[in-house]
Image 1 (tube, helix red, strand yellow):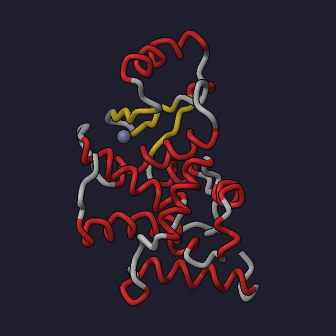
Image 2 (cartoon, helix red, strand yellow):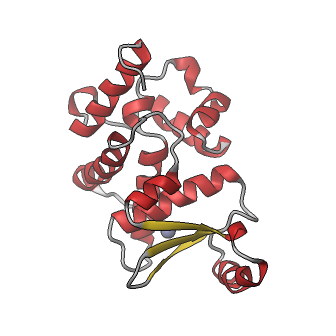
Length: 195
Ligand SMILES: [Zn+2]
């Protein structure tokens, strides 16, 4: 399902993702999402890290919900439990970003809108416009993009399509945090600043 979020909410979501990136020691993707989650008070638990007997109850949940991951919140901490056994690494990477989105955006229950917003957040986090807007045309090659950003070929194709269709901000209307990220990226690229 597609929702029209409106510029305001879209900016807010992109801002949240940008703030997380701008706070990192290195702004260059791909990111250590587990470390990012930890900073936000979220523990990422990969199914493969659990002893086999513990995987079963979670596995059953994944199976009946057809989910890649879910957020579990108790009074002590927020946990993201992600299926990294049956899902490929690039998908796990995007899924963790998506789940971080649910927590950061304060989604309390499942809805189509929450899913849509979490996907936008994940896209802003793993393929930040502030960075990819500076890519040259040959850097929009799907293979290059997926390697550079740590995303699947399918996600890279989507990203490429959106960028080439210019489905992003107009140059004179770019959110401040996106512009800041863009400037920092260009400085690294020019070799002015070591990242
Ligand atoms: Zn979700």
